[in-house]
Image 1: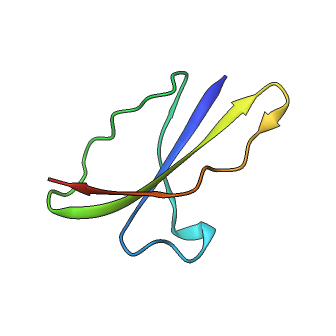
Image 2: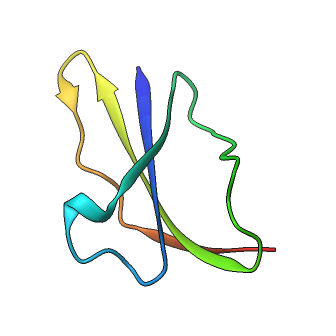
Image 3: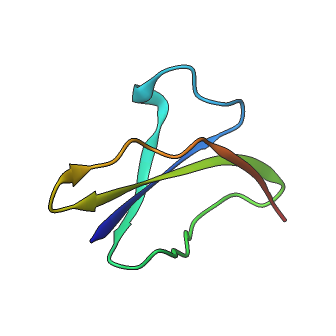
Length: 65
């Protein structure tokens, strides 16, 4: 299993092309570096399994301090 982590600066992306892949990992956690302090980001993740790639989760808004 692998995970595809995507992020985008606020406001929430209106189209798929506005999402940026931040990382691909084999764990269900990730540390994303290079984010701008005092900025709000949207995050989402999809799992890649033998059966294929799942839909992305609903986006979550986080403020970077």
